Length: 470
Length: 93
Ligand code: SF4
Ligand code: SF4
Image (cartoon, rainbow over all chains, first blue to last red; front, side, top):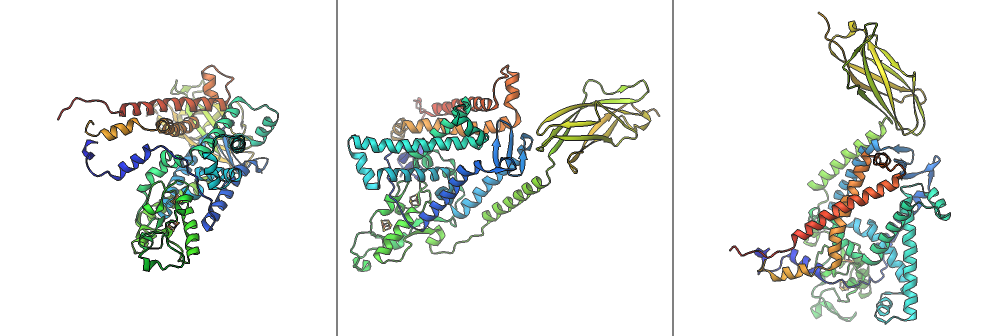
């Protein structure tokens, strides 16, 4: 650290200094415009999915339910068990890669439009505006000393926020336990202690993050915001201010010709600063606090329109375009991400399409290598574990293959397995030593459902015997 | 360290909220990941039976597991922060 002392402060240090400042509340001004509309649309769609989807039924169960108490996941017609963890892992890797690809191409589009933090902050801001009024009214209200009126307004706001947060917490838990049952328990005051706890916990997190923390979550807490600079390059889409066109900035009359006054197109109205939810000035250049919400684009376009200047002083662009070069969409990193993504996605689809919801594990009895029966047959003992990963009870027929005249002895001819259960089946296999070519032989167990044709699996095991006599 | 008093001072003046966040938040993320991995391998109902609490529900098991992980990871993050604090060293140069 002492090596940097005395030098000009580096960007890192500036960032650090920024972090030590005490936070001032940001009052983002309301914006209208094409990007604001797109943000609202995205918000309605995402919140609709979050609050609505758990209520959707499908074939007699909740369409999408990550049923933790029952340890199975329903996604429409598919059911997944803990044994299917590999799919979840694959899905998470795909999600991460998509984010990389998306970030390289479109920068922080995710942050501005789809991140839950942004979406819930937007809706909390909307509630705040409905209750407290516009930006100026909010600032004025906060400066006033506490009065009955101020108390009433603040109380209303927090009450609505809290109720909304509790509903959010309830919905969140409803993604992981059946929401209809949860609702019944709620209205009859029979919620379990753990469910209650999680509703309150998630509700509190929503209220805290969207009501109080807001942009601080993006700046201090979000790992994505910190490491995305590694995914950016000069061709990444971002929100930027056209310095060449805007500077020197300064106020002027609408009728004046800025060129005669020696001014650029920025009239220094600071509207772009007022709308920014993270409280930065886009004209200072690229900043990691910028979540790419495009609010400043909308507002500046309004200003430009009023001034009769061309729009786009602040706009979606790339570093390269700002330097007057061409933007390349297809570049090595994009191609690599896209190829990887395609392969993984193909693998996932293939794996799910060919997935057999049946698993057979074979455990040989460890205590003895083999027994000899009174009839002179060689006997091996196994425990079979049958995992029925379908939604209904199954009856299975078991066969052995691979050794001549092998005799299978089990407690019953059929193996019955309830849905989603693991059953252990002890079996014995007897073979004439004549038919054992060597001490260790491969043997195959074949399991076939009688309830659901086509549901079958084969698993290999070892059959041990004595050294054959020469 | 003594050469750079500004940074030393600034670290002491880290806003409380940020100090709390830097311990609780990374540990939360890692604890969530650990919980998912752990409970996709082990069924909390089985673990509860083994530990002698057959009445423990799965949701309860997940919750306890998550907070136990969070406690562990938070201790680790807290110690990292603690050991990162500048100390007075004898001058060697
Ligand atoms: S809104 Fe546009 S004109 Fe106004 S200060 Fe910002 S960049 Fe300049
Ligand atoms: S600078 Fe503009 S795009 Fe970036 S966060 Fe602020 S308003 Fe949104």
